[in-house]
Structures are given as C-alpha cells and as structure tokens.
Length: 421
Image 1 (tube, rainbow, N blue to C red):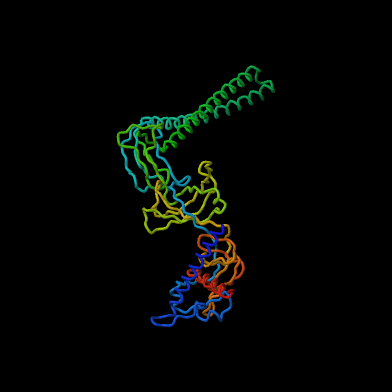
Image 2 (image 1 turned 120 degrees about the vertical axis):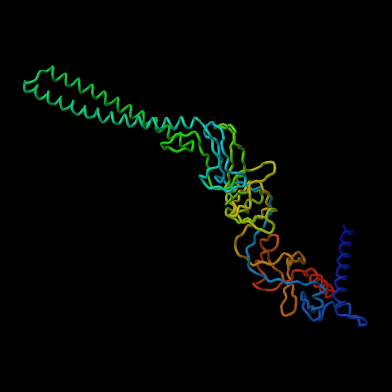
C-alpha cells in the first residue's frame, strides 16, 4: 500500500514538472535567462490560490479551448440498428377470390399503384355462374312482386265480397252457405298472397347472397355476364412481391399473388435495453440513416412502447413510425436509429463534460474572466454523453475551459504545493 502511494506521488510530480517545463518554455527563447523554478506562469506569485494567468503563447501551447455555460435540454442519443417494416394497416395482399386461370398480368414489382387499380385478370366460370344467379334472382323478385300485386288485388275483391255477403245474410237476403263460400275463397286467395310474398322474400335472399359473393369477388352487379374478373389493388402503394404469371391456376387457397405496401409511412422495431426504456418517451424523436441514402436523415417518432419483452436479451421492443414520403425506405432495409432519451426534458444550465475536473474530491471548473483563469467549485446535476447540468457555482454565459483544463488543474496544484512549501 505504501509502495502504491509512493508511485502515485512520483507520477504526479513528474506530470507537474512536465507541465511546468512546457509552460515555462513559452516565455524563454534561445539564450534567455530561465525564470525562477518557483514561478510557472506570469506573475503567479502575485495571484491568489487557484488563479492562473497565461499569455497567448502559453494558451496556444497548452491547447486551451473555451466554451460558454448555456441552457439546453440534456438528452442522450442512443444508437440502434433495426429493419424497416410496413406499418400496421400499411400493407395489403391481392389474392384470387375464386378458382380460375390468370389470363393477364398488368403490374410488376416496384410499380406504384393506386387503390382499386387493376393488377391482373382471372378467367373463372364461377364468376359467370354467380352473375347469372344474381340476374335470375332479380328476375324472380320482379315476378314475385308482380304476383304479390295481382293477388293483393284479388284479396281486396274477396274481402269486399265477404262484406257484401255478410250484409245480405244479416238482412236475410243471402244464405249462410253463400257467406261461408265467400269466406273460404278469401282465405284461399290470402294463402296465395302469402306464398307470393314468400317467393319474393326467397328471391331477395338469393339476390343478397349472390350480391355479397360478387362484392367479395370484386365483381360488379351489372347486367353483363362474363368469365373474366379484374383483380385490384386493396390500397395505394408499391408492389413489393409478385407471385403470378399468365396461365397460372389460382384459387382462394393459393398464395397471395401480389404484396402492396404503402411506403408513405414505415415503421421500425427497436430492441431497447430494459434499463433505457424508462428514458424513452412516447412521441420522442428518432433519427434514422441508411446506406441506401448516404447523407440523408429520416425522422420518426416513438409510436408504441414495450410491445414485447425478451427475457434472454433483456430488451423491450419499441415501435417507431417514420415519415417516408419519397418511398426511399422499403421493408427489409437495414437502418441505424438514433433515439433521443434523457431523464429531463427541461432546459438547464450546462457545460461540456471536458470542462469538469476534480480537486480534493470536489468538482471544479476554470472560469476565464479578464484574462485570468480562476478555479471555481461547482455543484453538478444530470449529465449525458456531452454535457453536464450545473446546479450551483456558475451563471449563464460565463466562459469555462474545456480542452486544457487538466493543465490548468496541474498548475493550480503546483502553485498550492509551492505555497505550502
């Protein structure tokens, strides 16, 4: 233990001696008389402890760089690599809604299509059969409605006959048998009316069912019967997959013929370590870069947090939605994400991390004012990879040393050692 402390003391002495030589050499030229060893800066003996004065040549030799204490939002920028995906609801498939043969393909991979645009044609007798059934059901509805109207008229006449016979019977002009005959006739005609209405209802049910089938097929309900059905895009986007050729036999159980993706917005799933998830907020900005677009930055926002947790890697899935109006990013592409995180979103007074030194276990900075560098203790708060919050000891727009602050610390320590001796 004693040996280690001795080595540490010798190293510090050697470092201070080197700094002193470097700074003293700035004030001496060839043939000049060396200044006294006890003085390492201009008029150092006349300055209070922790205060150092350097001329321009000394500052240049020491590599002094300055920065101002300013107010900013402290936020970390964490890097992730991930793969582009389509957004939920941002992709669609074209499938064959009925069995048939592909007759024409009028779209290809990479082509932009609009919602409802035809991409292929299929020939299927099932289509013609369904259309014929639809038209027949419409004719049956018209026939049944005409029958209902006709029978409804007969029912009205039969009711009038029953009322007349009832009146005559009450007056003793007509017999009970005539009244009963009229009532039986009315009941029979009413049965016919019920049957006609049932036929009309059945025809409507058949028409509704065939109409639903035609809508599901993507076919119209016009008066033309055809075996050729156009297959249309379910949304506007870009065709990313194609698995169909003319002459191919397809059906509802076949694989999808086309995959179409809306590239105006895409998403990325980031695997964030569980320790960093709390610092990433919903709506937080995320920047993306990709090799396919060198020098271009894509901007997105965190749209969902904690979708899945992986117990093996200890990461949480965070979904980010990216604006991709030009369609540059496509599903499957690798991107590099830079997520902004941090425990505070408030504007705080902060300085570069390089400005902070420690003396006797306390945080200090060197403030330049009126050409003099003064060591000043500070109290620190949160920090990220570049800046640290200053809660006490500095005010706005004060100038602190960043690069070269360690040399000033060495000078201050040496001056203190010289004063003690």
